[in-house]
Image (cartoon, rainbow, N blue to C red):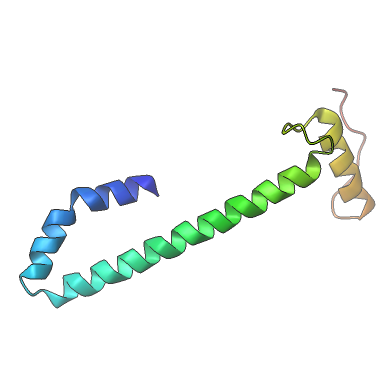
Length: 92
């Protein structure tokens, strides 16, 4: 995402020059790309937030790290719900 935005900024002057020249197509596409990038930024932020909440839920002792025991506990819960095939966890 950052690479796309950087490349777009590097070409900003060219885009603006063409838009000032009256090219409506470039102006329209520039607006659409801006909206698409804004939507992507929002979707990424929402996904990161969701992933963070999920990982914090697995971190039983709240130390910011997922231990082997915490992961085993999570997998046991998933297995108990029948959402994954169950087998004995490997030793730590």
